[in-house]
Image (cartoon, rainbow, N blue to C red):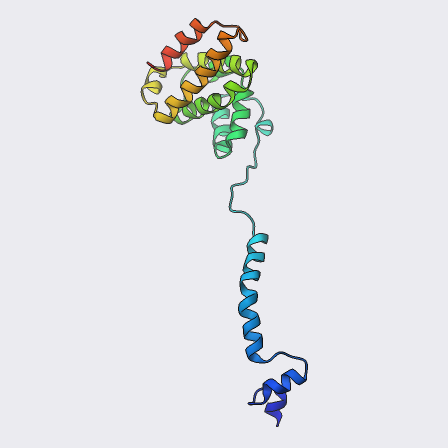
Length: 190
């Protein structure tokens, strides 16, 4: 009799129902249907596996050395909009003085990609891109860096120069199309 009252005997389901508790079969069925909903809720509450950018272009500030630019690139490389904003904040003279003695190929590629993304954003961006590209062309080992450009780098160079040429032809920037094309020829033969 004690087993039945505790719900352990054959009549236990009836006793549990009488006590206001679901039968073991009903409880199992409810658990099966609740599992997907609980999983979905847990996934919604779980932190995203997307990388969080702890640094920003503003928080890094202006570079004092080429190592500062490398630190910025390492901090922002998985967050292209932040890296683009950082590069957009570099003056061409800073790029020339800090990277003129050479730079890592990865940083060269990343700068080309950032300039490609920002050069078409207006006349000021196009003029900035031209200045930075000119500074990069003066870097030591420049000819080696350009020989090692992969297809995505070549597309980035082409896009950046296309945007600058368009602004030069419109008279929006302080250089003419011929000057832009001459600089472009240093980066690529096409």
